[in-house]
Length: 178
Image (cartoon, rainbow, N blue to C red; front, side, top):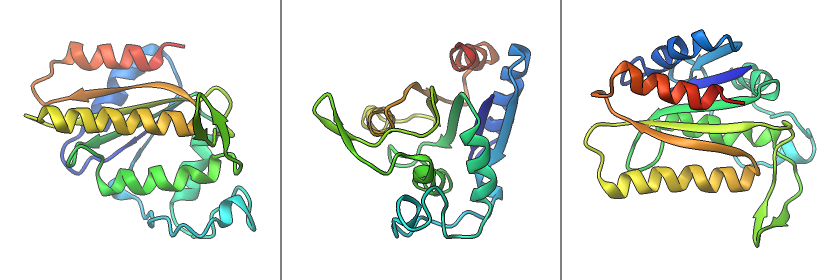
C-alpha cells in the first residue's frame, strides 16, 4: 500500500499524484493534511515512554498513523516553503515519531532511530515554481536527513506547475517501484 499525505492548500497535487499512481494497481490511501485536525508535536516524549507507540493528543493523526503503519511507501507532498515543507506537512512529519524506535543507535557514524514499519520507503515531493538553487538543495537535504534518522530508503522530487503529465507519471513510476 502507498500512503500519500499532501498539503493541497496551493493546488491539487495530491489528487494528481493519486491519479498517476492508480494505473500501477497498487492500493492507495491519501490524506489532505490541510483538511485534517492535526496538532503540532509538543515534544513530551510520551510516545516513546509512558504511552509507548501512542500519542497523548487526540486529533486526526491517529487515522494517519494507522495507514502509515501498514504501508510500504509513504509519500509526503508539500509546497516548498523556504526550502522546507508547509506547516501542515511538518506537523505530520513530527508526529510520525510515534512509529519510530524509541532507542537511538549509531549507523555510519550518525545517530538514527529507525522505524517500526519494516521495509518502509519514504518519499518527499516538493512543489514550487522558480525555486532558487538554495531552496532546492535545502528541500533535498531535509529529505536526506529524515531518511537517515528513520533508517529507510526513498527519494525526493521537486515539481513545478509547468511539469507535464508524463513527468508526474515518471515520479509515480519511481514511487510504485518495489
